[in-house]
Length: 307
Image 1 (cartoon, rainbow, N blue to C red):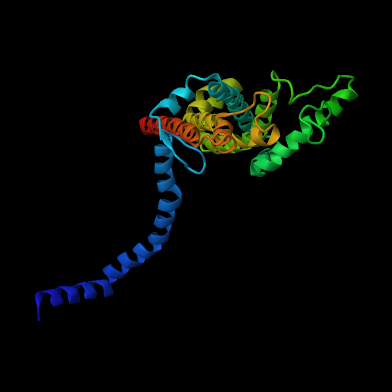
Image 2: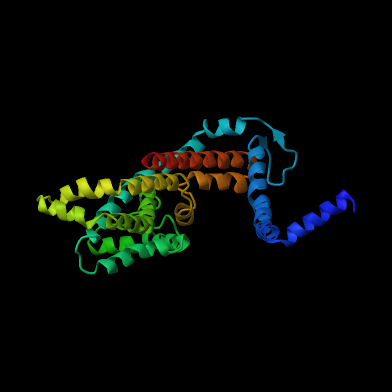
């Protein structure tokens, strides 16, 4: 028998054995997910990176290589830089959200009647679809589908007290704060649950020792609760920053990015698909990806240092 035949027989025996079957099963189970990952994630990501250096339309007819011009446009023209400014509204709102969530979580962890009922009520908005929440607040601030209408649920409540109606979604000084309010209402429930879990993980013996020493409520929070949940606070702040940089659904559905509410993600979609500037839109997508990667890297460094 030749050496090649012996080698083929040995390979066949290995494939029929336990080790070969294990590797074959693993390979076939992973084959479809890997193919889908390549087709729908990796290849489009590489193409988007290449497109960001080109001037091209949606069909890619006669693309022109322009180097870094798309990136220069992003950081020199005010219409694109203003979208970063709008993200600051959500960043500030996220800090308010974290403070309120921590306050509510601390209160619910005390001996409060119906605490579990309040937990469920506060967490319910987070379980709702973002589209549904956006439609609710659109009706809350305006009547019907008219953005410039001064009527709505909120104005109807104000009229009871003799307060004139306000065009909440038409006033550039108010509209972004209204959207931030809607965002806080939806996402604060998740932060509350996270903080409650962190607070309840602190040993009750520490609280008993603090009571014996005569510590008041503020001292218990500042010297026991806050140091004990500091890693969770850091995680929540990083996630808040990441969310502020990539906010999309609430402003897009409520205002469509009108009246100075366009965020970086909304501007990216409009640039690529409405104005058909695929190259510039791809550059915006790459910038957003880099921002998210930087924030994620900072998050990993913080928790690595903590460990």
